[in-house]
Image (cartoon, rainbow, N blue to C red; front, side, top):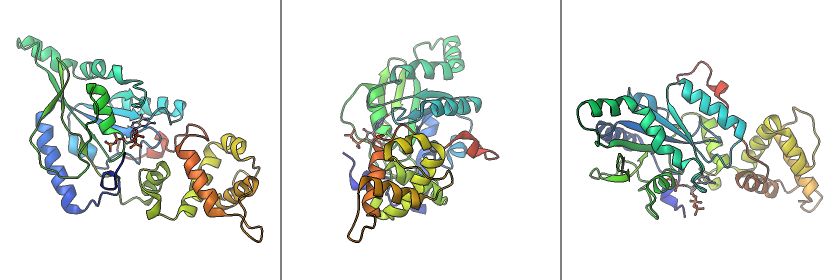
Length: 296
Ligand code: G4P
């Protein structure tokens, strides 16, 4: 379903970012709160680096999406982390609709003061207004479609597209800005690019698949050794480098080229595919303590 230009490989350049930032500043004036979608597997790398500045003091909700693919214990940790920063948190699996019904009540709680204020002014029926934002491919369109109970509407994944504000009715008391705000990831951090690539948000063909898989293998071996052990039947030292782990896995699988050497590229592609389809398990690659000392 994803097309080239809808992928994360959007060519963001400073002009795009400036336009998008301006657009968002305009949109922000129209809404009561901002709902930011994150990939629960990589809640740091799937964030926009400027979101806090962009949103200012607007009430915020974080949606931890793709919980069907993330480590459940880590989803709880991340929820607690964002709640501790004063944000509302919703955990969702947009494919199965899990968590979706919690959206409206969570918004009403987040904006309870506003609702009280409206009631005092005799405007009890006045709807709350929200916008959904996130980096490409994080699940914004799917989320909006689920929330609004509609099908087939695809976000215009082009930065800085001009449009008039239109609203989607979620229920009588809640409106969503019709298209999500597409934000940029933190390009300047190479680790962010790599983690986005692990999840498939960045296409493999722009990266060296073998070194990507070596890094992923090493990370999984440190964080989830039992899962790797079980899947690939390998036994190496705790601090074994990714290259050796990948090679051992390839050898076990019998991926050999002439001369008996391991076909590392094949094993690399298999690892990435098995990670992305959760055949290895449900993993989260980033933890809140990695943010220690940073701005929330
Ligand atoms: P975007 O608007 O932010 O760019 O993202 P979009 O909704 O298009 O979602 C990107 C892909 O992620 C879609 O898959 C979508 O189905 C999938 N997705 C969204 N939320 C979830 C979730 O909670 N769990 C899982 N497992 N997947 C999710 P696709 O491959 O483009 O399409 P399709 O396979 O659904 O047809």
